[in-house]
Length: 498
Image (cartoon, rainbow, N blue to C red; front, side, top):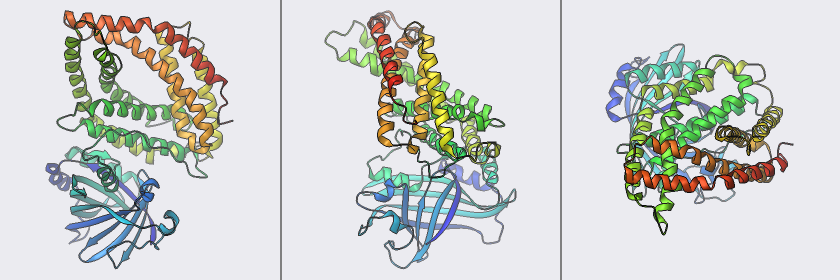
């Protein structure tokens, strides 16, 4: 099986937009190089999902009586791809790199199918040769089905920047949303029981041996962008699910914070064009989801326990009704932001900057990541310690800044964790998570009163809100003391980075 590198961008869109994309694309380079094909792919894995856990996918695709076995692995713009023709319906486990991925004697079973009608065209664009594919069809596993409609841009030769330039041009003709979930990942989700898009947490950063500072930033940024894209897709669903929206809002904000934190951690090699734009766009996105998140937290952490309590305060039903109306409006604001032209441009521009930006030539970007990681983690902990001096004497604003520094340290730890031993990282993160939790509770208390005041609640609901906020306020001294103790335990812990 011959190894290759697939350099590709993928976009989700509506079936009604495919014609506009095709019309806006350059004409085919050669006569007859503009065709429609029916593709049938069967994806395989072991019963215990060895390939999925290794970040790989294996398929056998049939077209016009010929079968091609393809294994892909990797993340981001560039993925490793191995292709070879085969004779049978089942994959050949002897073809590389399957022997190194599969345990000896492992059996491969069909996991799910993908059927698409593909309109394909190859052309020259800004010094590059690019293949455009418009896919419409479905992924199926068991009795579950999920539609597919997407645009793929694959770089055959030339500069990768041309892919992003073309993406911007096509996105002006139709709403294209950068997507990081492959057909394989959608099939895997379907088999796992997720028939509809669901909120996604961040994947784990896995840094290869010999990774550079630039490699580390790209790995962290790619996962953050993928998390943003996946949760934005949930928020664009119509009608928006009240069951899915709160977690999607939360995970989208986590993805945005992770990327913003990485911009700060790697600032020494990121100075220059693109940095400030990325920071401003991510801040805009987080702001459009902030109100929804604050309302969701109050509903889940304060109102819901009161409703289930033995003696809920009078007016709690009216408070619930008013809060649900406000939450739906806030979810709509987040949904509109994720469907906007600015969001589409944000994702394309941020991905282009991560993958092809001038920062990659910055002094230090090609240095080994180990020494950089130690310095960055040490700096993060030092900044946290300075902010922690005010944990008891300071005000809510001071504790809010301490919370931000705790998050930055947490995200830096997550980003560099694969460079260190799992047990040491886990022990340290246990203390850091404890500090984050108590600081989060204090932040929820500080934001509750102004959040509810902005709702202009009717009198009965306002009374219930006042009762609940008062109960929260009574717990503040205990929480402040708990934050100080959690900080002491963290500072007494041995940093895993040495």
